[in-house]
Amino acid sequence: AQSVSQHNHHVILSEAASLELGCNYSYGGTVNLFWYVQYPGQHLQLLLKYFSGDPLVKGIKGFEAEFIKSKFSFNLRKPSVQWSDTAEYFCAVRSNNDMRFGAGTRLTVKP
Amino acid sequence: SQTIHQWPATLVQPVGSPLSLECTVEGTSNPNLYWYRQAAGRGLQLLFYSVGIGQISSEVPQNLSASRPQDRQFILSSKKLLLSDSGFYLCAWTEGISGNTIYFGEGSWLTVV
Figure 1 (tube, chains in turn purple, cyan):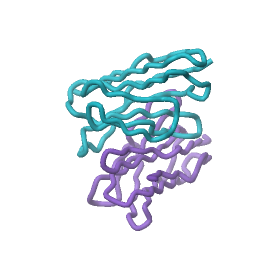
Figure 2: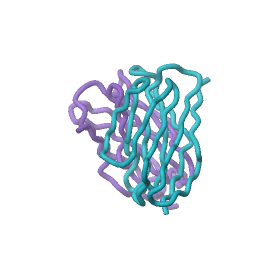
Figure 3: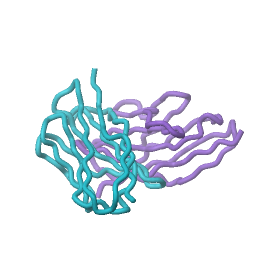
Figure 4: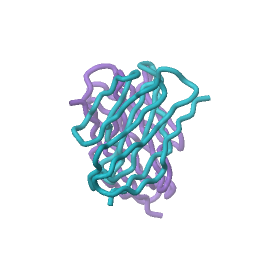
């Protein structure tokens, strides 16, 4: 069955540390890839998305993600996190009519 | 502009009672419609999706069902709720097969007691 895996359940970082959250998927065909963020008490917000072209995608708030087709991965990165980045992050993959999300990674940034 | 409405926002139901959550989309036609459940530590679990009226794909075996009686209406139902059905349910839509962005409703908190 098609699946999306986020390997890190909970990540704890200090401010200014670099971030990388892993996302792997099991779809074999053409995919569209997304990262969403959910701040405490708020709804999901789109951080960035990849449809085609440059595999390095830049999103809002200094986030970026790299699509590596050979590894079926779409990892999220940020060079220097802030306390306000504390949230839950979801990777999502769309293939045809199917849109699935990973289990999420909770990021805690210590001031 | 497109909007998505989902209701009720919160719901407390006894075990064994029925459920009906409704979702409607405005400002678009022939959307793909989705029901997700968000539970702590499990992310967003895809429950059902629909590509057209009367067309429902079920992703997980459960005592929930979905129906799409109209193009822009998607209903999540249960005949008899279980405690394990408690959670946060999200309706969502995309623009058919070429729509690459998903739009979410406000969500419905269901507590089964």
